[in-house]
Length: 76
Image (cartoon, rainbow, N blue to C red; front, side, top):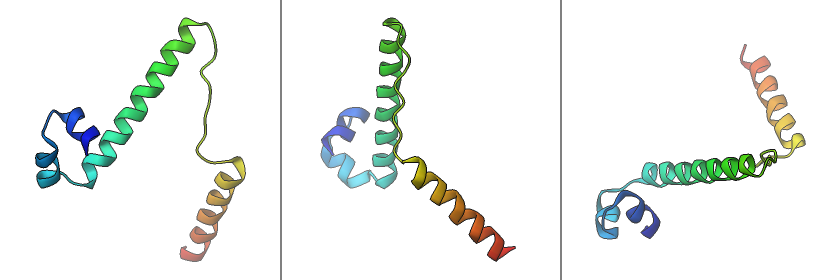
């Protein structure tokens, strides 16, 4: 709560009373994007490529694609 309240400039009690899960998701996405931009700037300043970090392995992504393809064949 403290992180979201600081980010949006409200009291934590106001955040609890009026906030929703969407506020948490938006704040997490925004801070992640800010971190990405900071890393990108740092890498460019040092003349290095931006490090790529993936949340999923190649195998997990392929499994997801295969699952969608299977479901598509069943539905249509």
